Amino acid sequence: MCNKIGFASKKEANTTKNFIRRTSSRAVLPERTYFCRECGKWVLTSKKIFNKNEHIRQKLSGNQRKNRRGRFKGDD
Image (cartoon, rainbow, N blue to C red; front, side, top):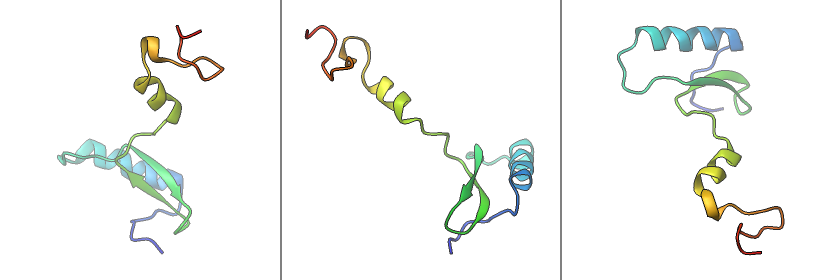
């Protein structure tokens, strides 16, 4: 079991998330809900969705982007 506060449904978790976002003065607010496989409940997180491809695009910009062969553009 995990130590997270869990909700029985996604709807309940989203309702709570929206309530906290509207009424709380906390510096860190919940961003989204997700299903925890460890406890089997819906939980809140302040982490934004992590998109691996977007992270790579930000890391490799402009001339540093690799082509389909794994080479950097301009190295052909």
